[in-house]
Length: 331
Image (cartoon, rainbow, N blue to C red; front, top):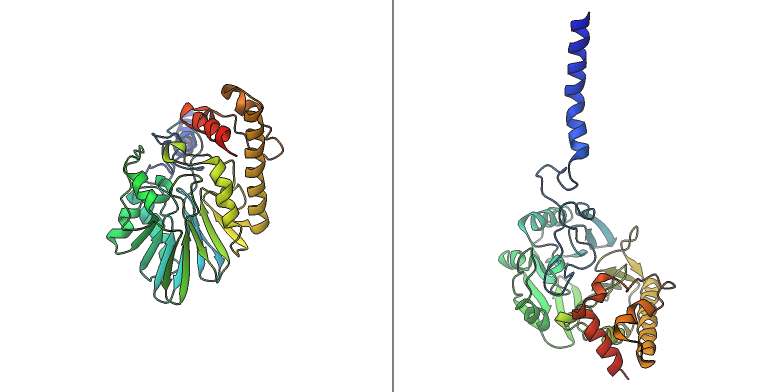
């Protein structure tokens, strides 16, 4: 009887052990291949990966796997593994907006999601800015035959950009004017550059027929950040958003979505724009009153707009110094 009891206990432990070990495994190693989603924070310029990147092992929770959903007829959104990606299906091929984190794993997973809605080739790609969670797989799409449209400042920024994940490829179709038009399969996609905001190379992808705008990290569902090392600007950001507001859209795909909200309405965008105006107005007033630079961020009232700018990221001299300087110079 005692021997039977011992055998039963041993069998019970053998069955339970894998579950216990799985529950204790670091997050990101529970998905088959042992690879983590997201990546470590980027190097030069601080957090160059946008809003949603994961931390190194033992850090913040990682992003969920990529998932695809329809926004409007013929237009799909792929979330996860970097910035938001859009896919426009036309009769003659696909137009993709942003390319996820750099790496075969992320590219292959993105293509699997794309192939779930269409087997047509990707003919055009638009990349909203140079941070690797949006530009990571430029090279892969170009190797597959796509034209990748970026503002010329994006390619210029890539020359000195050095993220830990690796350097994205230069895009093969840069433009240096305010607007670039793509026509494919009866669909017109407009790409706009209105000036410096998140970076100096921000582009907006706009579908007039669907009234949908993809904003990259110039429009996000959380507190934004200004990449001053790559010529971003808080003061100019407001002017950029004023130009965006002139477009006829009812849906916005942000660079990174707010929790529980994948897209934004026009009203959401206008509220986001007002928060920027409030932040810059209050910051300029403080500078005008002679507030010392090292006290500026702590004194900007932001609790009513839900943005905390008194953070380590904003406090870095590489960001705070040019922010204070442009506020002081602004008319």
